[in-house]
Image 1 (cartoon, rainbow over the protein chains, first blue to last red):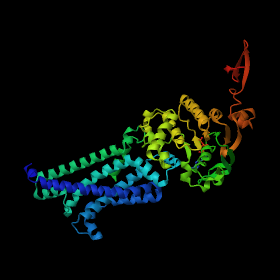
Image 2 (image 1 turned 135 degrees about the horizontal axis):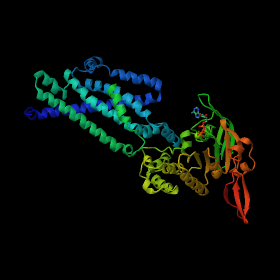
Image 3 (image 1 turned 90 degrees about the vertical axis):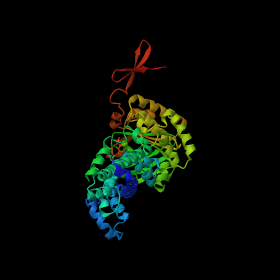
Image 4 (image 1 turned 180 degrees about the vertical axis):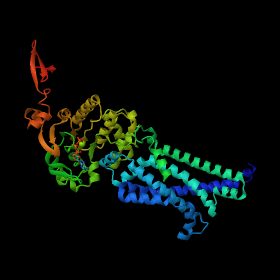
Length: 230
Length: 270
Ligand SMILES: Nc1ncnc2c1ncn2[C@@H]1O[C@H](COP(=O)(O)OP(=O)(O)OP(=O)(O)O)[C@@H](O)[C@H]1O
Ligand SMILES: [Mg+2]
């Protein structure tokens, strides 16, 4: 405890760093996955291949990607860019399938009605499909957010500092307090981000909770399980 | 005026939904397409707003071939009411209605005002306006669907079994409402149903269809009852089942109308 009080600024700095790297990576991955998932849902044959392709990326061990990327990209070995790119790739790998499922969950009858009412194709995509895919997208995003926060800690092994540095350092020095504080920090961050996402969902999609029928109960948790198994 | 000229539709999978269909639908009247499931009613209806393009023939609105018109703009100019209301679940009732106006470039304030007005026209309480469709009963949703079809004051209103999903009492209410509205609004309505009673109630012109969009008979309800074209029509409208063949029996000087099954249905006035 006294170690924590002595190092509170250092822990706070790591926490903030861990937070922004995770958030940026998650958002980039999400932004990459959206169009691919949309396309995959539209064109199942070619789309299925890309969904599988992204899924395979997830099987690359993260430490391997962290080490290989600088060579491939020509970035510095300790650069945070490598880590953000690697984490974005993993986030996208999980998110593409969820995004495809999310767009698939939108009722064709509703899309048909929107078309008949005179929505143009792009108006329909942005004003109908995207919002209606929202609940399932959010469920996926919550899973990805948590997994990104935990995966980032691995990057401390290649010297990019974050809350994970507390346990690499703690292990090296055989100092339990530091390890525990690292774990607590990561759990707190994951929970806070999850709460924020949940809150954003409530604010952006008030209809989803008002609805009796739009989102089948259980759909979100099913997707979450699937993503975790990926 | 809407005109179908030798229309045919074969879907990509080879299903021939409509063989060869021609019909004129006069302006400001209600034409009802009636027939059993799968006979091509929806296909014919959706050709009017280019949700389905015919593989053969033309559809004309006021003598203009609609194949030459931009489909998005065409759809914005035509009201469409679907079987399950087809509301956007993520938009409030008022926004569902206003959206059609907004797509037509009407400003926000005016769109809201007109939407509230049309909700009142279809008999919906203003307090429902800020609810989501999922919070409404089936009948209320259906009314919102009708409101959305009417809000931009289109000349043409397409209605595809709009009252099919509600209970008989609500259906009668909605039918009466539509008749009242049509007396005021004078739209060109194309109405699809498989219920012959609904067809006779609402239609100025009734089109009885067989499989493949084949016309069994076209005419006013009275014409069809007076001169059914063939046994198919006779049976379809129920002339072979008794409840449409009425006769008068005298009971102490009062003329009681009795149907073919022997059930008394009313009293004949002078
Ligand atoms: N997109 C499509 N692709 C292939 N076949 C279709 C398609 N849409 C309709 N059909 C077929 O065309 C025929 C006519 O369908 P349509 O929907 O017009 O019938 P309907 O008279 O409206 O029937 P219902 O009363 O059941 O709504 C049916 O055999 C149907 O299976
Ligand atoms: Mg139909």
